[in-house]
Every structure is written in C-alpha cells, then in structure tokens.
Amino acid sequence: MRYLQAQKELVRQLRHDGLSLNQIYTKTSIPRTTIRTWITDIKLSKSQLSFLNNHVQKVLQAGRIKAQRIQKKNRIRNEKKLLLKGKQQIGKLSLREFLLAGISLYWAEGFKNKHEHRLGFCNSDPMMIKFYIKWLQKCLKVQKEDIILRLTLNRSYKHKTEEIERYWSALIEVPTSQFTKPFYQKTTWKKEFESDNYHGVLRIHVKGSLNYLLTMRGWIEGLKFGTISDDAPG
Image 1: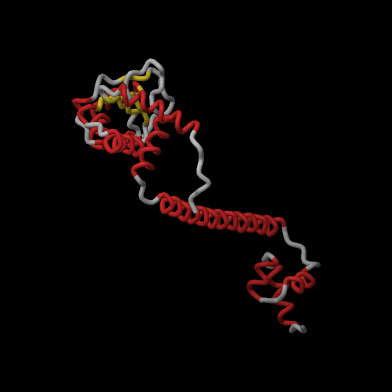
Image 2 (image 1 turned 120 degrees about the vertical axis):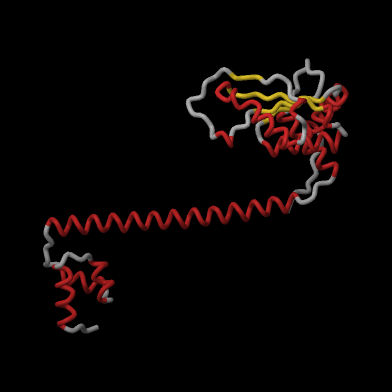
C-alpha cells in the first residue's frame, strides 16, 4: 500500500515527540511494521526513553490488573456455580441420610474416649453446632433441657464471656442457665479476632446419654466397615 508523504512526516514527527510505536499506531492506524521502517533512524533523548519505559510499565501493570480482575471474576463465577450444583445434588435429606450425616459428624468431632459416659461434641462453627443440635432432637429425640453447654474461650476474651454465651444461647435456643463454668485457655494470641467473629468453642453434653454413646460407637463401627454402594451423585 502506498502512503502519502504527509503521513510519513506525521509518523516521524510523532516519534520525534517521544511517542511509542503503539501510540503512533493508535493515532494513525498505519501498520506497525511500516511505522518501524520510517522511524529507525530517529534517536530519542534519555528523558523520552525514560518516559516511554515508564509508560510501558504502566501499560503492563494495567494489563496484569485487568487479567487478575478477569481471573477473579471467573473464579467467583465458578465457585458460585459449583456451590449451587453441590447444594442441588444434596437436596432434601431422608431421615436415614440425616442420621448418617450426624454419625459422621460425631465420628469427626465427638468425644470418643473410652472413659466417656455421655455424648459429647465440640466445635466453633455455628452452622455445624446448629446441625448437631437439630440432629440430637430429630434422630435421638433429645430434649433441649437435657443439653449441657460449656464455653471454651481464650483468656483474652474473658470479659466477653456473658456476651458470647448469649450468642450461642440465641443461636441454638438453649437458655444460658444450662451453661456450666467456662474454660479459659491460657495461651496469649499475638493477634486478636474481630469481636463479632470470635465465639470460642462450644462443648455440648447430653444428660443420661450413656446408651446413646454406646450405640454411637456401634454406628461408627458400621461406617468404618460398611459396604459402599456404586451409586454416586450426578
């Protein structure tokens, strides 16, 4: 393609002004290969080269930020998609499925020492605690008045004991009168949690639950050695 002399002069002038090859292309739409042949003899000053270098770095940084933003957006979209898919796959639990889920939870987080004489469970996850309380009521027919609670806190939060007990009490709808004396960890943390995010660890015991504990041990053995169906969630 033939170009006018005026176009070539414009390109050279822009280069003399310190513009980069890409900047010249943006302004003129002349192919970069052509621009390069027209400006090979033009030497830029140190200040112009420094300016161009800084500009290139800013463009690269902007490109990285844009790529990271797109990557984050795609990651969040994928997380939401898989979260919804997983939730839909679980769907409504049958009573047997709910029973097995609770047994698995107890296997992981329950008190299993041979000297235990009642069901015991502890965790700091509010939703897990709610699940376990519901499981006790639904599957074992445990009455809430038979639930004994104990709070474990780092000593840095001792002054918030009553506030945190009220939090758990409201969450699982068990009165604070059923809390026993809290236990305070003596370890001093270098960094404290935000007050709204720290609720300690809640220990849950059930009165007169020795038979349930013995049965739980059998249930856990059943999970350990039970046969597995080939069916799997789609």
